[in-house]
Length: 604
Image (cartoon, rainbow, N blue to C red; front, side, top):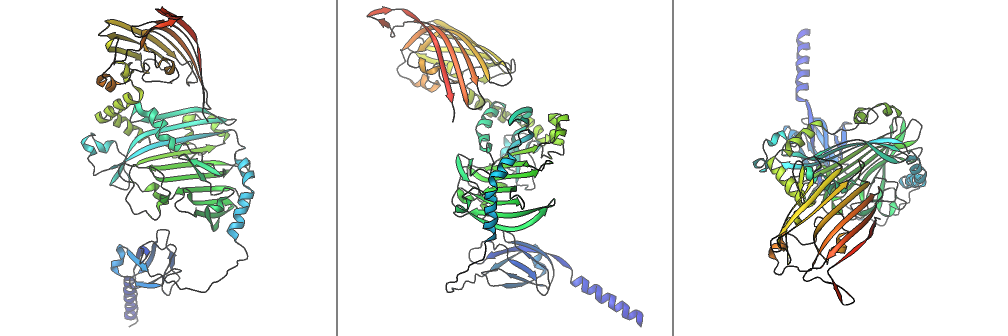
């Protein structure tokens, strides 16, 4: 009898456990009218202490049994209940009805606004903390820069690219993959605040356009994330820092909570613009409780800020206490999601975090910089710094470099690179010889008629810091050959000093002669128009003089936006049927002139 009772109890217990088996119930809590997420709503199982709060997207997830009653409530809404059913396993949406009651005026006078008190202490200590952080003048850093292009797997790109699966980067989102466009790694040894490049590795799918990519697209990444400044200049705009002296005029500052990290107490804040349409940051930051200095700050731009082509932006800076007790930079991360078209997705409300919401055609730019003052790195080769614990960097995946090499071999990529290279540099590049400037190949004027030239120079594959060039031209009307030669030499690895020398016998437009000397890297040195002008012109320009000239040019390019050029020259000028040289009513067939031109450029 006793055995039967025990058996019955075990069966009942097993049955009870089976029917009360728990599973994860998840879903979203939303406003029934606006369909907007209800943040931080309370979600709990009735008659238990089991519960959670919804996140900023209104999402919740908790463990419950079939038949349990889940209560949902939030301030300003009528509470509601739902019963857990088997069908709930696929997720549920809970809608709350707003409950607003008009009250007489209520005056609330808190004894103290603790968030403002702490924020005032942050401001009062800001100057001291800033000086401490930037008092470290000797350190090392490594910077990783990447540009990826989002590709829709359903697009027709595979028609133009062979073996598309071998050159794109897989992601969790199988509908989108990424095409590496540009990769760069740099290591700097900073001594007395002056960076010394000790290691560099870079590659891009468009070799002839890499310089343009660096100067145009990567300018978006030239951002100084120094939040101790009152303003940060991003995309040519001055953005008020969330810890600026007058931040409370622009931002709502909230004290979230406090936490302990590595034995240090931190105060955690969040902030958002008072005017959501203003180009201001939204995000959060943490400060040390004893010094009120930043431990970490992360910022975004709201979608409503409406910055051209910027679909998403993220900036993050963290600081670390050094062995000497001083605070110094630890990491900086800048991420930008560029798009010519506005993305149509579900992140309209929380557009501040659109950096990770991308669609076909988006350009994803990332720049990560890691800092260290460790003396141990003195005994490690610069190319191996990224593997050391002092940095713990997210290195550029070596497979991505392999992807880039494969992409560069694609016929369509080679064609785009070649055309782009000609448009931007005016040279057609071969392995050893460059042909150009292309504007000099064909032109027209009244003296020579149709002018055909063969301009060439040595390429970088032949000499890296030396270029030798020249041209040979022929006019169909004058039946004359014209020619010239030039040489350029860069004595050092950096283009700080450059020496040029040239000699030519040719016709020159008198209307542009004195101006062309001041145009740096002019792709059309003769100023005679372009192919379209040469073909469509009705009247050919007769205002040319014949000139034999020799020129020297010494060029100095400083690091701080300062350029100086000194160019001595000697020229023998000859008259032409239309251009005469007259002095005291006497015609001269030729005259000589010499001098030196000085060109100074200061950039502010």
